[in-house]
Length: 113
Image (cartoon, rainbow, N blue to C red):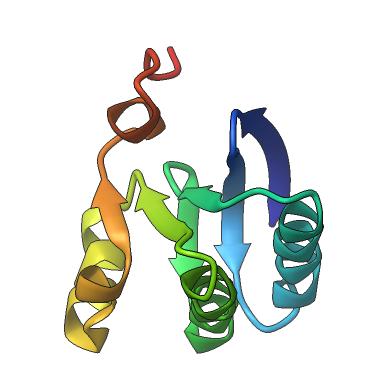
């Protein structure tokens, strides 16, 4: 797994590539916590290049949601592949998080080329 961070106003966009499993969740959690410490009120996970996520990875998203909910913030997930979207639908996370095709759909910017 690799993570790149891009800031856009009050949002931190975390682009996650590869597999997000038990070994990698601590690293992603650190990126989320850093964004929250910097006062970001939106955390956007760009999963366009994500190939796999397990329950440990989903836990990081829930942690971000719980922390941001207190301050009227939000967590969004963009670019889900069909088989990962199915995991979100089965678990009910499609109702918990804002889902979008591209980060640009949410942040009013052009999607990456």
